[in-house]
Structures are given as C-alpha cells and as structure tokens.
Length: 64
Image (cartoon, rainbow, N blue to C red; front, side, top):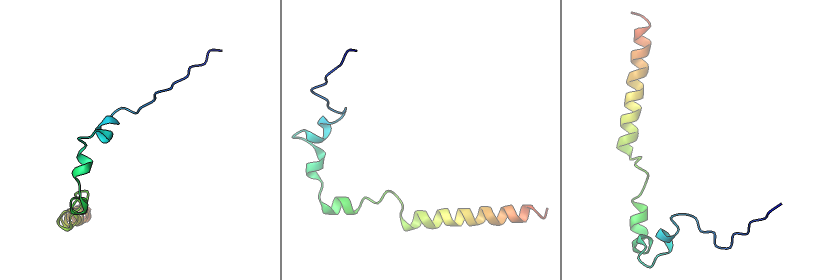
C-alpha cells in the first residue's frame, strides 16, 4: 500500500493572520469590547415584542 507524506500543511487563509500587515495587530481592547455580535438591548426588546405579538395573535386567531 502506498503512503503519502505531507511535510508542509497550511490551512487556507492562514497567511491572513500571520502576515506582517495583519489587521489583528491594529485591534485593541476597546475595539474588542464593542464587538458584541449584534445583540443589543434594543434588538432583544424588538424581538421579544415581535414574539409576544405573534403569540397573542395566534391565541386570538383560535377564537375567530
């Protein structure tokens, strides 16, 4: 059975992180603190209100 030896295995996109011009060098703690995945209190409130409205409408639809 043939065997294959791989000596230089590098994941694709690795050079984006190890390059001397990497954007990761420019990040600081305040930049990282402002990144919260888009779940702001306003977003959570709006989604909660939409879910509540849907639930109320669904229950009212059972009577009509």
